[in-house]
Image 1 (spheres, rainbow, N blue to C red):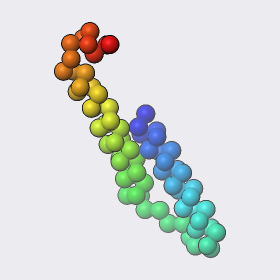
Image 2: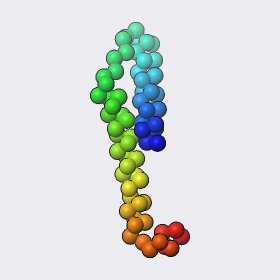
Image 3: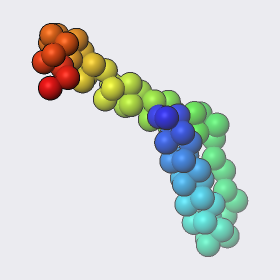
Length: 67
């Protein structure tokens, strides 16, 4: 799911970059590491955001975690 969100963000960034470059008459150049970095950052943030509640719940008894 985080990869999908990262991909959507990357495509939005590509569209914005291409649109601005076209309005200025410039060629749109988007390096591959920037694209991979965007998806990777989204996945890292998602992993951290998912891990925190899981670790917190693991320290509780099952009935407390469900409440």
